[in-house]
Amino acid sequence: MRKFMAVAGVTLVGVLLLPPPAAADPVVPVLDQAFQPVEEVRAFYLSESPLWAQTFTVGLTGTMTYVDAYVEKVAYTTDPLRYAIATYSGGGVGSLLTQGAVDTSVIFPSFAWLRFDTHDLAVTQGDTLALVLWANEAIAPYVWKGSTIGGYAGGELLTGDFDTFKGTGYDAGFRTYVSESVPEPSVLALFGLGSLAAGLARRSRRRQEVG
Image (cartoon, rainbow, N blue to C red; front, side):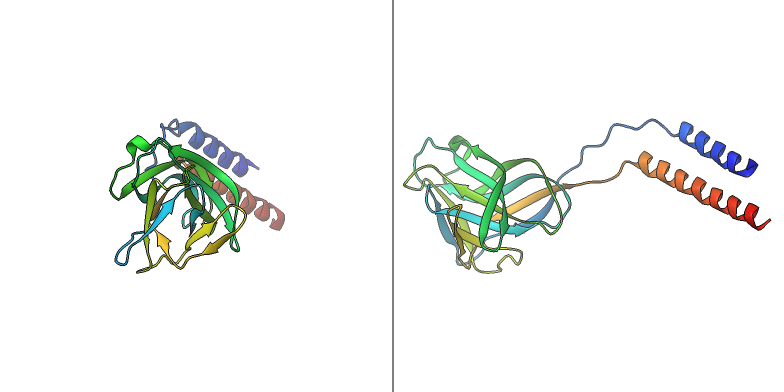
């Protein structure tokens, strides 16, 4: 019993001596999934119909901070480019997880990477999701660049509407960024001290039972 109390005391002192938790360093999002269009480029015109959706498989568990798409503006418009991240399963795009719009004034008349805020969407490794782009105009003011060369293995570009999509055999240029979840060092230290105390207490009980 005295040994157990001594171990508990050491553990308590260790906890009290731990420095207060420091402010967490900002977690820098890292590139998770991507496809860069190369030769044999195809242009997918973004209008109110059909919709275009690039599916992808999440590689890192954490928070999806933003995604990029390789697009350009090809006609005058005041309508923003609209986007959504949706669930995807077996040929169908499901519920929208997050969505938004990018003002036309920041979209260039030549192909460039355009960033979309995904509002800190929680994702898990292995999730299959879809990046959907469209504009609420009959004549497409935007184009999404893609190709078949060096295709993306974790998904493909689909076309259709939110009820029915079909594969195209192409991939559109996209990039996803995820901030991985990392435990605080102080939490790991507390867990280690607690495990040590529990192990020593079990050893003490076994010795008492044998004696």
